[in-house]
Length: 165
Image (cartoon, rainbow, N blue to C red; front, side):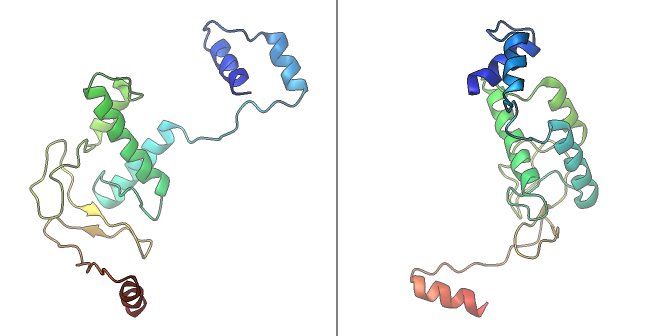
């Protein structure tokens, strides 16, 4: 089944394939499902990032961003693909996509960008967006410290502390 999908894609791209128009027609008549996932395109995610930056003033989207978890994961994936590109390995991040991201001040590396640390290179972003609880998009300023989290070693004490909070 997966091979049939791959062969159709190869045929559509003009690559060598065992798929023929006749085979495609026969599979269509059987009700073959050619696409199992309805993935959002790169351009749609990019536009979501542009809107995110307009609202929050930054391209630093938390990976678990409550309002749009997929955007947070997509942004992390762009950074991952950029690292592969820098290593000379296969990357889906095309030069055009890199240019688009750079045009909005995309931050490629999160190293040294923690709260209270000096700003890294790669754009003029301000703070970072908090993820979690309220579903909002509060912006944490560079000099703002995150709330302290006490680590409990006793599981029962951790549950009690969480309930009390």
